[in-house]
Length: 126
Ligand code: HEC
Image (tube, rainbow, N blue to C red; front, side):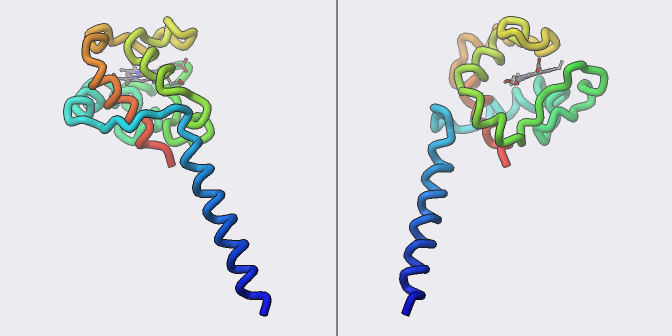
């Protein structure tokens, strides 16, 4: 009669793995991808970052470095929402990244849109 014990251990390990995954959000907010954020992403960001978030947009072909692959879960776990917000509003140059990542100063007064863009970037995580 060892089966119940094995099942119990499995269940415990499984729930442990699950709760750990939830924690990995490095302070992520519960922000939603608002329709406005979706529109901004399509119009301004996807040209470089791609509609699939992999950095494969048409304007990215000649960029060096290329925009990051947003589906990379290791990177997703390593970057904070605040770092994403700063990069979006102030641009790559402001955070020691490529100046080819343009700033979006008009979004400074629209934190909900910026949060929506962060949520959009998070949504690409595999
Ligand atoms: C002209 C091309 C271009 C456009 C348009 C663009 N980006 Fe980028 N973006 C880049 C590049 C190139 C990088 C990589 C910079 C680096 O790694 O040094 C980048 C990096 C980023 C990063 C930082 C990722 C990291 O590695 O931490 C964020 C966040 C980001 N972009 C969001 C956006 C959002 C949101 C928009 C639209 C509002 C946008 N980008 C529009 C080219 C672009």
